[in-house]
Image (cartoon, rainbow, N blue to C red; front, side, top):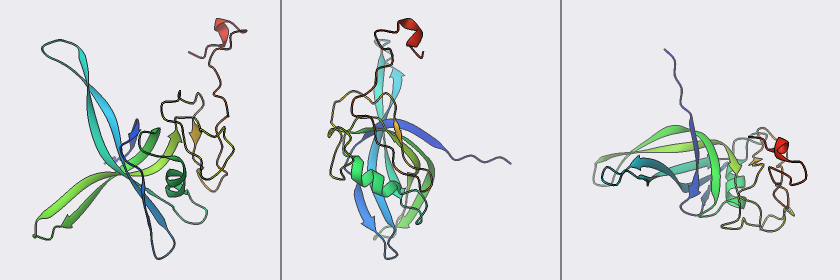
Amino acid sequence: MANLNKVMLIGRLTRDPEMRTFANGGKVANFGFAVNNFKRNPTTGESEKEPVFVDVKAFNRGEKGRQLADLVEQYLRKGHQAYLEGHLQLDQWTSQDGQKQSKLRIVLDDLQFLEPRADGATGEAGSRFQRGAPAVRTPVTAPLGGGEFEEPAAEPQSYAPADRGDEAIPF
């Protein structure tokens, strides 16, 4: 029997990442994420946004693996837009009053930043994205296996340069 557990979302962080370091040196970033579902209002017939809130975990995986927790900690803040790929994980525990509890979370496998850097892409560790800035035309992908992190361009590139005409439009 086939089995597939994959989640792909574009949305915004609902809170700043919370970092936790393990005794073995590993890290995890926990943050909230929101996406919109659209539903039709039965009375007006218009489409309305219905937000969906999820919790996300991003781990650093090994010395040569993906360092997603570090990327999330360094570059993402509340309100930033991102594309996330991950898988679902069911966390279960027993509360202090003896009740069984569970929560469905997303474990991050890959991400793309969808907003430009505010500092002109100098690569400084303390830099942050600009809230409300236009989306980067070529999203930056996190390294997939020990590769270097690719910085976004200082100025987002336009899809259609004015001097090339309609042929340059990629859609």
